[in-house]
Image (cartoon, rainbow, N blue to C red):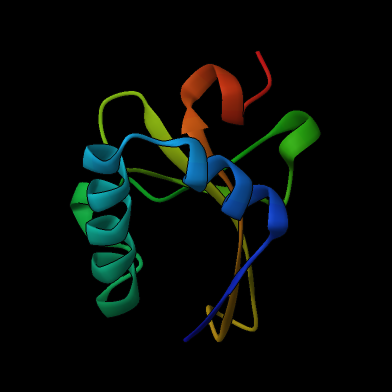
Length: 88
């Protein structure tokens, strides 16, 4: 799996407290080993975010991404709270 980091992801990641950065890093490590690990709650999105997916880092922190070629390439789009990532 190749992970590509979108500039929006990098900007949002840089604004996170160090403690949450470490949790994001750990979630990405798990994701690399098994994108469907139960702890990540990987799921498809609907509506305006159709064709995008999300994984959970903490109770309210999410990573928004797109996958291509059956997870051969993954584009990490954004990271943030539920309301930030889903635009609510």
